[in-house]
Image 1 (cartoon, helix red, strand yellow):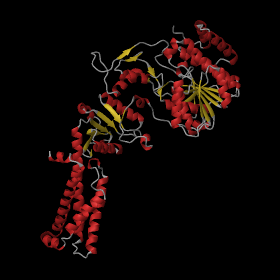
Image 2 (cartoon, rainbow, N blue to C red):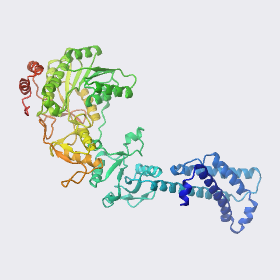
Image 3 (cartoon, rainbow, N blue to C red):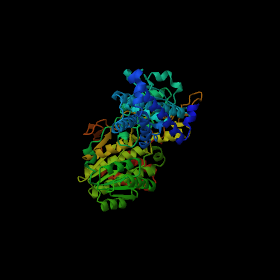
Image 4 (cartoon, rainbow, N blue to C red):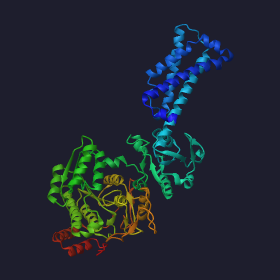
Length: 615
């Protein structure tokens, strides 16, 4: 109780107490040093050299004050204060000796000075460590701090433990690590156990703090999955990249999000491929405000294009990408935002001519399968006619390269969006074989994390509302890729393009959507409702939507070749020649303009025989 009362005193009184303690320490240290060195003769030696006591006291308290020894906050002191104490006390002894020598005072044996230094430094440090640790324990016990376990007894784990002990925002129960050589040892008095120890001691744990930022992603995933199975929530330290680049501090704990678990080991871009076509070029990106178009824009900016033209029909999306570029892009960057529709041939021609465009990434399209299915005329017109106009104008103006951002839904399409993408691919293929001066190529890939059509943001919002999570079918599987990785691979594909080929991006391992939903519930610190209605979030099945598949494919004929990039493959698929496809497209355009849905579907079926109308 007395110590607690002292700790609550104001700074002035605390400083007076510390000064009193230091006076006591110096006095005891001087007296005990003489006794320890001279035993029975210590009184005689002490009398002969009595000047040492007042001199050391006066100089000690004076030097402590001058050097700011009393201004430090002991509660938040780390090991640095011990080094500071060693230096300051060495200065006190040195000045005291100098004072004695200069005034030709009676000097005791040299060893006495060494003992005095050791005692003052030792007692001084011990008392301050005790005050610091006691203050921290009072702080922690005064508030309800979560009980945590540290996963990882390496350098990051030790640093995290020190930080937590300083701030007092968590109460560390124990540490776990996979290295059995560390088991039963301790860090700062906290014992290290096997990860199996979590199973029998999970009832008192609020969080597991994962502190191995250098661990390979596949191992990290396995560990986090096992922790989740125990019903425990996980926080983790930032990645090594974030720590090294100063974006985050190691002690900044962040929740494990599903995006991290769906990611794969990063394959660094090949610099030559990333910058070959884009560097010092004038680039047009259609749909620049959409999920893929936006990330393409941001990645292209890093490769120092001569100019970037951002075309989008959505005013808000265009406004947002402009703001990002203003904030993050280099000052030398020349860019031009264009609010307009890719189906406007005069606009596209004007933009390309005036800006002398050399490279086009055509990302503009309606991508939501269910919405396009309910609005077939608009979906077909926007996706197909925009692709036709981009191809037509690019060929006439002899643009160097034009890249179509396609979709895995173009393979044996069961929905209108997929059929529109397949027809867009055929248009690009036909134009490439017709026009030699322009390289037309396509990049086909599946879902990207957190894109506008991804299930991840949908599930996140449903969990936020308290559920239920809606899934079409328990067996639905999908591939996932980060937007950043997809954009980088698309840019590198442009460097590999020679004309007419379909590039396929390696999407990694497929993910069962049901498992994805369960993991997101767990990562949110909630539980899945069971048959007895116990739990937080319910999962309900709505049935496959019109045109939806259980799984997606990337290849039509299953023949692909590797390229210079390990995650990019290419395929040469069947196409319809220019003379045959263009009349069909023109007839389709007339039918769409006249809202003749039946005739539009007939033409689509004629171009893509494998498409099966789902209604």
